[in-house]
Length: 306
Image (cartoon, rainbow, N blue to C red; front, side, top):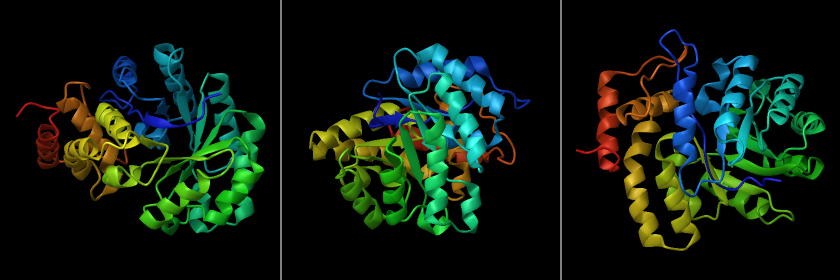
């Protein structure tokens, strides 16, 4: 049984100009990221792949394509992006039957209006009823209303033993450190996978057992090398790698944050790894000036020649 840990890039989803899925380019993207030394899995049907704009059948097809390319040699984490628990169950069943190795559970949008601990526990119980796969809880910032307070987290972990990791986007360094200390101190440990890509080195040195990030679709190799350097206690190397990553973080993770994966698609076009950077509405193509800044960042990261 796969225990979520290590470096897990979240893949992007290429589209044609008519917004249909470009399956050939997606296959190439899967193979390109999957061959990266040092990664432990890949994630699909999540924020990076614009899952909110994908139908159930499209998600099923994305899983099929992914499994055809790498399913026999690399674990696949499948997103569970649904407001309702019954919808979440249907996606979990499909992902389990399709060969996924773990499920990344997004918070329900309903909780933006407030939540009670029993709501969160019930949501995860429902998913665990239909799938024995390890679950990864996506921890949003508490200020969004969709994050889980520590007491709620611990209730979910106690009552849903297949919860084996969290993808932490708490955006609060103090809370982030506490979650690492508390959750990874449990028996069995619940791994903290950081997604604080804007301050990745700072996050990793706190002791995360992995990272799960959409920017891994562009810089998986740098992330894997950075994680290995931190694990080995090689701070000078980690700082050097972080200095290369920082220019990309500064252009990907800036206001408006909704465009982060839009920008990553543009980066892959600049790198010659995608033919086009089409996004589905309501996302819109970014400006030529912003694309130029991304090009500069890729040069500074030593990913493009000057």
